[in-house]
Amino acid sequence: MKAYLSFFRMRLVNGLQYRTAALAGVITQFFWGFMEIQLYRAFYADHAAAFPMQFSHLVSYIWLRQAFLALLNTWTYENELFDMILNGNVAYELCRPASLYGMWFSRTAALRLSRAALRFWPILLVAALLPEPFRMHLAATPLTFVWFILSMALTVCVTVAFTLIVYFSCFYTVSSDGIRAILMPVTDFLCGGLIPLPFMPEGLARALQYSPFGAMLNAPLRIYSGDIAGRAMAETMLLQVFWLGVLCAIGYWMQKRGMKRLCIQGG
Image 1 (cartoon, rainbow, N blue to C red):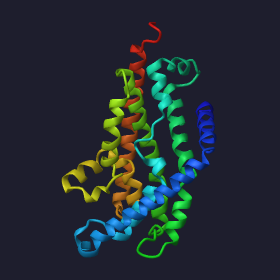
Image 2: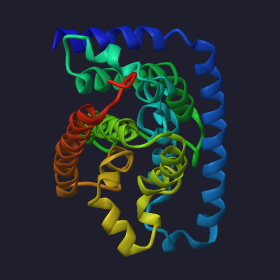
Image 3: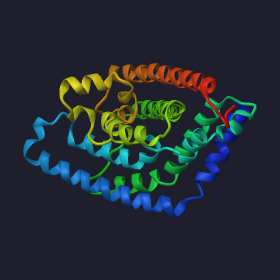
Image 4: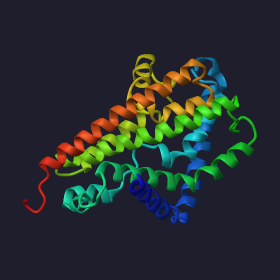
């Protein structure tokens, strides 16, 4: 465990150095969130009753998504890890006295956390000071906020586990470009990164809610905004725990099986 914490700490400290990039991200994400709220506001103006989420809930959802974009998105990958697999440098990782899966899990989680740590608080601070109807509201109750934090932690783990499956899929391909080109837009849509799941057709939204994509970005943001409340919060988090176990098992199996067929320098 100490080895994995060390990997996590080193990657976290390294990521916190990119302050200029974080500032650019804050500005971009704030204005993107503001424009998105304006777009939905135009639709809600005349047809508010036809939408599945209250506008105030939607506003909180959008600001949280922008604030924690670097932490929760499904398209943050490290080119270095893809390259390690494709050029054979993963052999050096295998020499370390620790599990490859655990090392890469810690590293990936730290990368996401370091990027989000520099960006989330300015966005949330400004969003909380905006006038209505653009203001982001506090969670309905302190208990809801606690559920939100727990769900966020599970979401990060589920997303990292999914990311590792993408990495280890390169053991079975000659290039990562095709996999990434397909998965980046598709997974962002399916987990609610483009539009919240309640805005999708009812059957699709229900299916996605019980899929691993519903256990990602969708879950904590809807819990905080109040769109998922009561017993549904506990059910959502149980699904997150279930999918975390499934995705970790799949990723670990892919890594172990890939190691048996990996060829490095002809050996």
